Length: 145
Image (tube, rainbow, N blue to C red):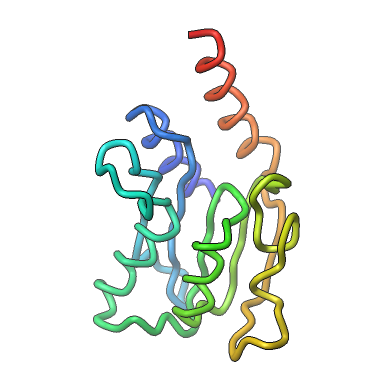
């Protein structure tokens, strides 16, 4: 999670919402990293998870991320949760819950839907205060500025 937090800080420094993600292979090696990049790229899919999943897939040379873990500072939205399911990620680990848009248990629970052919394990709220404070500080600065 600390590596994902470092990615989140990079997003915040670039003026985007500070969310960061890393993908680990089965041995724990980082094979993909990313942070929110929507503002710079003008790409609505530029979420940290999507960037990290793309990097991991490129690193492995396949879209199937079987045995991999997605670690992200904020609970994934529906798009990112769906992408993790499609990529066959084994585990999703997230920091802060997202009651407004979270799709891994808070608002929706995309990844545990029994109708899907793949359901990753979920480890929720790892370092939630640290992950949440980055977001709270970012939005507080925007409201003042």
